[in-house]
Image (cartoon, rainbow, N blue to C red):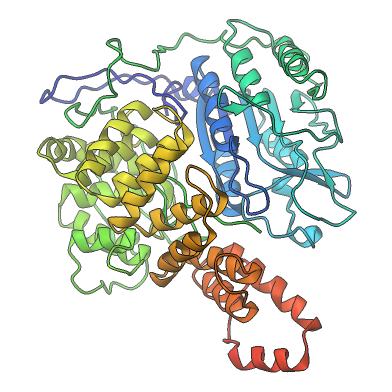
Length: 596
């Protein structure tokens, strides 16, 4: 990865190429330079109990600021348990000894048994936290992982001091306690330890995140002074009702913006015009050596099948980029009508059937047959661990670089699927430098061609404020377009916006209808979200038996949230009346599993 090529809330520069010109290579720095300073920003707002309007945008704002001073960043919005743990594991794996690591989290946090935890959007342990909280969610656990990776400096900024919604056991304390991360670790909290605060906002972001992003952009500011400035800003803005806290165990002065020189560009084009569109051909990076080898859930932008926890199949890929049998997902039986278009439909759920692994097999076959579009779909799947494949980002980059020129030509000729693939490449850094502004341009062209994933990913860009201004209403419109064009991801996420009243007027009946559509297509998260509505009697008639069946369907479809909710209802069933227990015993399906 290039130090300046990041998934952030604004677009940073890939040199624009004239329409129709051949792709040009750029030079990348050494491995040590590329990974010297990295950041992971997570913003969780779509909790069923008390959604937070600004959290996802907060993550983008902070990582945008970090990008501007040379950090290589990843941004994750509205993440469930699986995605949070995956992101943290990849983050620490990328951290090189002696490097600088910055972790930011915006969302809900709580204290339990003396430890402080950040919560995923699908947290279901409000009544049984001891069975749900894991070490990886704790602030101490994050700091420990960074230390084990031998980080030179670890910085944790945790904006999770909000009061918890609804009722919760007396043993749970809202907010975060005193966190000591160990040697060479700087821990910053949005409020004093044990204190909770209102969800203040400023400039379309949370107040703490806005103050932090502003301070980071101060040229050459020293680490301790930076958080002093954040404290003063927030305290002044709230009349001393919120006073941030920092624990500094970093002996040496570290100054932001002082690092080996990197080529930074502004977040807009020189002309100030709209972000580049499909006629801007990709700038291909040179090939690198292959290394050794209790809330509704929103599917991620560009990763709609992230609902499942995947086993790691034996994956081998040769250096000369020939598809090998090792890429197989198991049996070699392909779905009927197994052309590439059918694979795309299975991946999006268009036509009423959601089958990401079936789509993966088709992408694999098409790539093996020499189809450049098929190879790009396969590369995209392997890059982030989609469609049942193990994540192999470096191998995926090599695959993408082979075919980017052909995919660009197809986009130039008006192919909306090709435009989507280029948008995804620029958003994620697949074979090109990351450039969210360019991604927006390609997604817009794809959506204009009524390609469902183009509309879906463009909605995510507006929701996160990545490569464009944040606009929840526009995001809702685009999720509607995606759903209408056949994307069940779009239906699920539009339902979530209706349930929370974000970008649209709150309408729980409409939310339940959209979840039902996604669930009927086999999308596990849709079933889990609809189960929550049925359990609470919101948008649909209250029906515990139906909720259990929906949670079971979600669990069997790979949703850990569905498994947890089903397990909870099973335990609560001990207090049911005899006739309720008998009815449930008749309905129970054998072999349901917990754990997702």
